[in-house]
Length: 363
Image 1 (cartoon, rainbow, N blue to C red):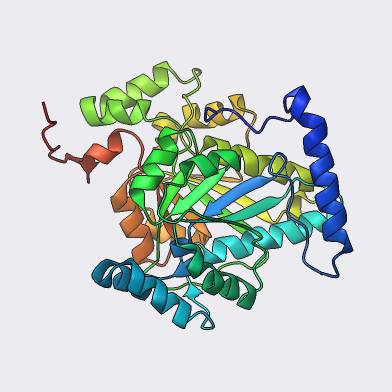
Image 2 (cartoon, rainbow, N blue to C red; image 1 turned 120 degrees about the vertical axis):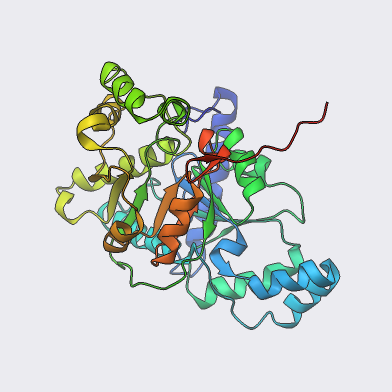
């Protein structure tokens, strides 16, 4: 599966009938249960968001026990405290906002499977599951799919669930997911808390090395801004290659269009933002033309010409902001923005424009 692949609408012919029968049986069973909980959609049609338990909940104290006293003490602690709900973590407001969008989609399209599907993807031991389930029920979150891998890498499961976005605290797992073509980011808690919208999902993206490839950033780093401006003017009509988060923007666009089709554009519960350090006049056109060539819209495009992103993000108040450079992530979270680092491209070798010493490769 490459980053450009959206979910296939066609399954292999042989699997189709068997799979349809399984889903029909599961649907009938679910509908016979006396429950107000909506049934999870089929992964094939859903926009699947996989979150780790440490991004959904604040598990800093529990993690400390694991690191200092080992697995057995950690599991025992979780079992002992399983009736105490965990506190919300960095991904919690984002997940709540996804549920808000789902509620609106269900009102407009009662039978549609094109919804957000939230999967808890954790390498926790299954014993810890009871506390996680209790916490999810305490906050009335709609998360029915769990993957508890008992210490194993979740990457294979992410592919099986046809994941559109994976959020974790573990940068190595995130890097592994990106290398496998899955949109992914490492989440950070903001240092101050700001009030976020409870009626609209707001998602902010950096451009280069997030929505787009790092091809232009390589020129900035290696040849400087003047060469970059010349290059972007020369190639203004050549779309940039896609970056690791392009598919997630595409998935958001697919759901936005369902609202537009019902004449709800002005009342759409999803809003997207491009927040880029590029200058509009000297390098902005290529970015906008690239999005147009992909058939994607972005609701607001903000070209900062190198100014800090934190103050602007404080006004936007996104539920999540994706960037490939840690100093932008740090600036954002200092001012209360929930930020997610995308470990992709040449920017990982630099900090504040300076090349980081790379460890010597073993011969």
